[in-house]
Length: 517
Image (tube, rainbow, N blue to C red):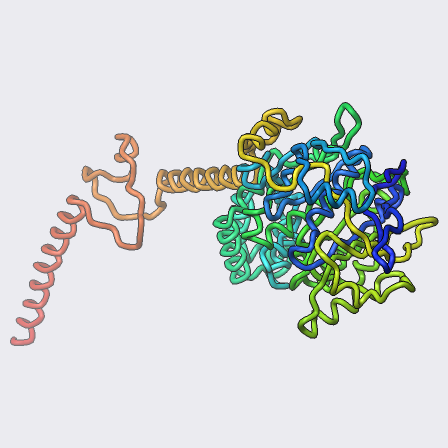
């Protein structure tokens, strides 16, 4: 059943349920992307598993997310269970060998795998806006923030860097608005609150260094097999927006970093995007256009992207048109939307005159699917009703001890497990603030030491400015328009008032006396 240069998916059946032929995915079309759909419990995860096994044995690295926690079993040798042996016999798979596969476990939280991080700068304002569900005004402020960081030499690495930059922008909003455009303090406040929510949801684990290097998910083993990178996503799914944004960031990084190689004999990497509907739910138009662009152009870089979701309607038509290899498991058609989904799925296949796709989709059993892959010069094959082959690795999760043993011998052990916090925007802005405060303090002291310049009348022997200067005493700084009198000044004023009073009385008496005369 196995053929050189092809991945065996399963065996199709004729209308009378007899064996028809093997169904394969040609490796040279593995970078033309694909779609795996079906209702819960119909076998999508097993299909993902057997495709990952096939690509690995062909020397193609694989990246996939373990949403339910049971895909980790791909790192352990399979067990000859009765229902697996029965399926192998049904489809004529002989010999049916069991094996384990080279696995690298990853985890954004660092609990079930190696830490996965990226920096704020690498994420960029567009994806960050998606992660924060930002409005257009808030996205504009984020774009200004990244522009200020670029021009001001302020590396944005983690959450506290962006928080410090936003605080700086709020304190200098008027000046910065004149240079970069209006910066709304209300938008700044909303972004700061969203960052606080992200921090509470664990996003601070994701932003920082050392950042993930793309080459570490594109490894091959000494025996030529592709390493399968498995992202632990069971906890991550509690924050679906972070999950979707992370996978989109990773896809974008692959697109930006990998060189063009045309159509290779086999892919350089295959990327499985499980629960793909989370990527497109409430996604703004600009983001959908970005996904479409990446999917369309990343093919020439040797990367195949396979979306795994329950309903084909979860994927926009512009993206759906780019997916050449299709595996459709059973769908239910109880509601109008589900009936529409069945019709959409049936219409995407090249028809088979032996059966009606729309009818068969609703009657498929577990581990059975409609399969159509690219063949010849890249045209889709006629859709076939196919029994999916059983996996060679374990069905079900690894134990904690087995997972830890895998981590202990991992080729990336020690590269990402410790945090590294180098100087970035937070430290630079804190240093600038400290220097500004010190400069202000020094200026205040200099102003206090300078002569006041205010003239006042003096009497010899009562300590004028010259005497004070010669005696080394400093004039007191004037903190306001009112200044407390010194003892000498009070005495002088008292004497003056007494003299003035006596003279005044004498004058008055003289005047009155002359009047009386």
